[in-house]
Length: 310
Image 1 (tube, rainbow, N blue to C red):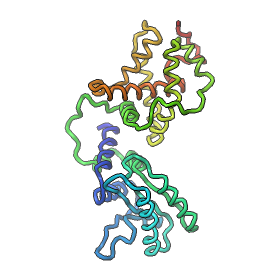
Image 2: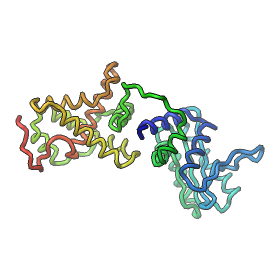
Image 3: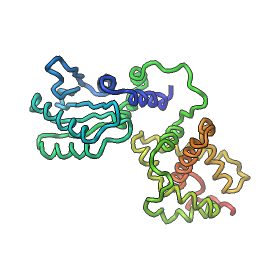
Image 4: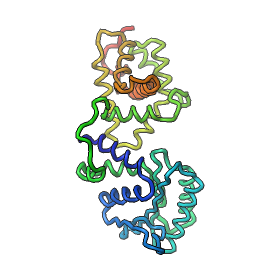
């Protein structure tokens, strides 16, 4: 079973987990990934005293929050600070505090992070005092052995539909296509000085150069997606894109090879619906622009290779 498939199923469990389901999933993950972790369940009127789980040897405590609907930042802040007050009263010697929030990969609300920073400033004895969201939980899951991962995600299907692209490249394309940000909005800093030289060296027309420039100004979105992944993903995607570019017809013009590469990155299932196709085409151009800029795909003017003919 591929690492991507297992990671995908873990993400699905996170998306479906609220309340006690999330607490059970978190406890299972921590028990398998953190030595000495102790899960805590509420007990009658005693409750959990603000402690959903802890590592006694480190005096590190975790309080969980998994709202059933989109979280209200004000409610989340109140929960984070209020639970710490209960925890501090019950465990006055605590050293580390983490507010674990199932943000469904939307990111921890800024007010929550800010409230924890202020809490640490007010409590000089605190070491770590930080939020933990879905991205960090996924990273912890992906660091486990495959055997441990399978035990967490449970039963898997006997076969995977052929129309699904379960490669690392497929994963990043899907995340980009699902991204709410405007992929073509130009808001990035200027491109590297050699960008124009490389476009000319590869023999691209002004139209293709303009399209590359348009998406390169947003290529930091790829960095944003990869920042939550293992470092090996960057190289894996680079090699896959380069391999597909190498597979385009050598007799085609530079512009034709560019567009053939873009189309080759789009999974078949995305081509059945116009809006999905558009989202994946923009994602493919974003990935190509990222690796073009990094000199990982196409020809490099600093190499010994001969330039492409216009």
